[in-house]
Length: 542
Image 1: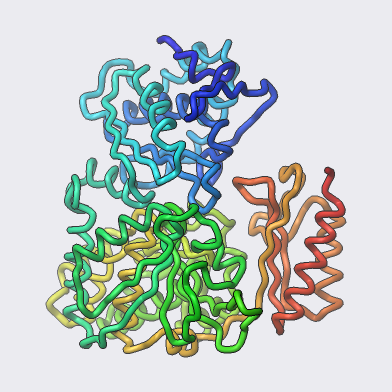
Image 2: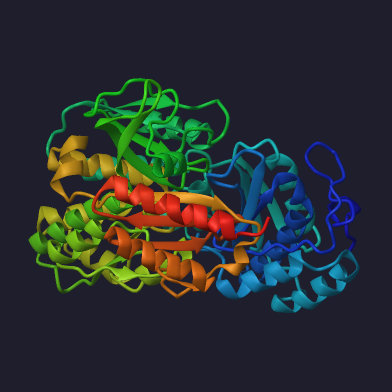
């Protein structure tokens, strides 16, 4: 094997052709979102990821994916993650190999690669392949070439799929290995979800035509949402596309709306009964919202009422449980709703007390939620940030297929399971599912907001820190283990102000910590969050 010096730590040529020498002390970790950093830092990482993805493809003799994206981060950042053969995230054991390989010195790299080659058969595997896609970031094409160079070190086929949403790359990997999941190739994704959309729509009441204002975050969701809705071409569902060609994730996108609780740019003066939604940069997160009835902050900023991942999960859970009961399958098929510490307490209470299912809590990160959700026949999981889906077991699929003609509820269950993209959180598929369920219930966005539960007032803040590694938490991330002084401050502040709860946890991808507060009023939640953010800023070394 020969290492291209352009993709070494000692050169590390970026997308502008500039050598970006990597400090020997620089370390990077493969986390929940894979590797993520400034785009100019990543060429050497991408080369090594290409090698590892090819090795994993050889191990399974199947197609493996590489997605180059930094999701909701600004355009100057980028990232990469490996997608396993069934469209799932790479298994945790190989995350260790990825981190170790990325942090290996140039001098030791060949030896490390030879060592890792023992993980897969040495001879050529005929079905082994790597497919790679990028989002709209300017660094993406160059970084994909780095991946391709890494793949070329092993005798594995490589295909560049150009620009896709992250869920579309997961879909492409799945159908390459499991043709029954849906059609492959250009337009296959659109055909799959168009068919499912109309199959379910035929079983719900006639909808009144309405307009959805969709914030595309100036990202990959813009062209791909247009393609999907053009294929569906439903006069009952009109979409106004906003934020398509500007600066990626700048004052728009799901993360901006969730954190700031403001209308995205370009939305203008929107009435409170207008249904709005935001994608993130790579279209794997979805947040619905409406303009607040009263929270006009000033002439240019209008607050929003969020219908976030908790509201989406609750909507899906309500529908699924109702259909199970109507079909006589409740109790025969298990149902799980998986949440994280960020889930609004009111959603947890509604799911437990009204729907009759006690939510299960896991640490933040989609891999934790997905791993738990697949334990059930129907596993609903969403992070509050809008990332989630529903998983369905083989038992569920066999049951509803065998009994699909017994009653309409069973048929609805079957076709709903085809509308969502069960292999990964997919903003476009989730959006179709939400729109269909709002038609089913005859709800507008105000009805949806008010007929389920009322969110406990809450505030989230991001606080930059020099080293996020000094912040460690309990397994469920609701309490800090270190620094203990900060946890003591949280406890004292919550008690002093009579709040519901508060916690602080480090980001898995950036040098920031996230503050979350729930209180009985928005004013108290904001005050506590500001106190904690100031304490963190004062304690963090600069």
